[in-house]
Length: 218
Length: 218
DNA sequence: TTTAAAACAGACCGGTTGTCCTGTTTTGTC
DNA sequence: GACAAAACAGGACAACCGGTCTGTTTTAAA
Image (cartoon, rainbow over all chains, first blue to last red; front, side, top):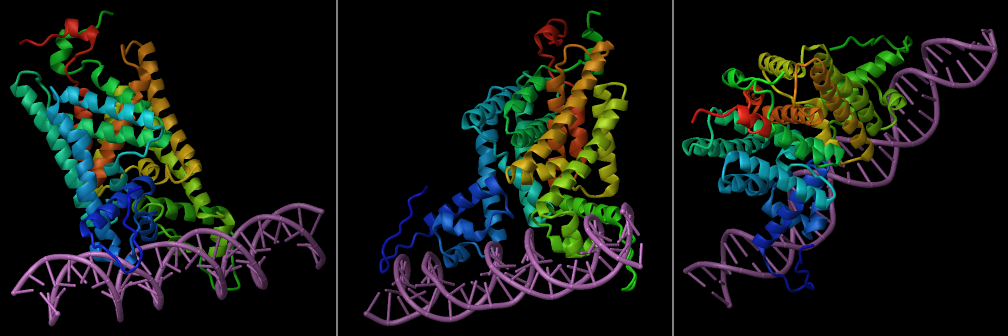
């Protein structure tokens, strides 16, 4: 995939940053497709065109490599597909709708579903190691925080009322995570659309305040 | 944990069903706590007090063992904690609320969160093998179907209107799955309560039919 | 009692895994 | 150019994994 400088012996060019990036690229992709435990360092070395010595120089252990993938790549992926769109959108609800739709469309034209990078690793590694767990938990935290902040912005601008920011954020993240889990298992991104529609087609209006005004004609 | 008949050599008692059950017990627990790849057959054999020959007799491969765990144990767990309560509840919405609360309470007094057995294995194994994927997908399917059926019952009884059964089911399952994912990562079941409250505190009432009647005083 | 199949015991093996280690080359600095 | 540190090469290795194999014991049917 990436062009690797394989010159004939005698001439070597050190490129620590490029090599590190190549390793992270390969590791990120392999962890996403096969998971952490099913990805062997041998496979990663071969795919990245990197020797054992070089790999060990940049990432002393497999755990260190995974931690770097989580902190640099997974966090960036969440930032790109969720946090930035949320900040840029007109409202939190629009943002959620937009991301669901965008991801669904992207997955459909891609033809297969590998799942959410964060959730994939969260399931496999949260209980395996405390360092993994805290790194993953902090990504969930900033994700939720970004959505909650947006709701507060909406409320200050009068676009939203009576919505608990924390709970709305929790619901959004949970629904997306779970929908991606199902989409990965069924290999069908349609469930993302089902969820986002159920989410804003709203339900029975059974909040006490609403129930008084919103009664059904029957 | 389970009493295993370890008599002195010369006396042996064949107990194929008991042995099989012991292996499944141990495998289910280990897959839940450590995952599939991180669970070695050696560990399982030791924990179950079973020799290699016996294990191989009942489960020729590790994959066969995992498939049995999925089809017999994981499916049963979903049935027990979700499907049965849904059928027994007064309405689908009550059922969802009840399961979220019950699981949250159970996890809190338990002190730690191992996550949803189905989602744990779904993330790790869906892409690893087609047989795993279809087995897991069918559990998701019956889970969703049970909720959708309950919504239809509610509608026929006049307890519910204007709710798409499939979408509601998708949303319920997705929210639960994602909430359990977060709960596992943060080791805090509180997110389950956040989600279920956000789910029935309802949102902006922006469905076309509702928007006409249910306008906000501002 | 005979007998065949099922149930179980336990050693064995080839392959893989992650890590370490020793050496060599490149690179920046004085 | 000297030199030390960083960057990289590549083999070695011990532990482990999953699966297989042969043999023994139990069990139930005949």
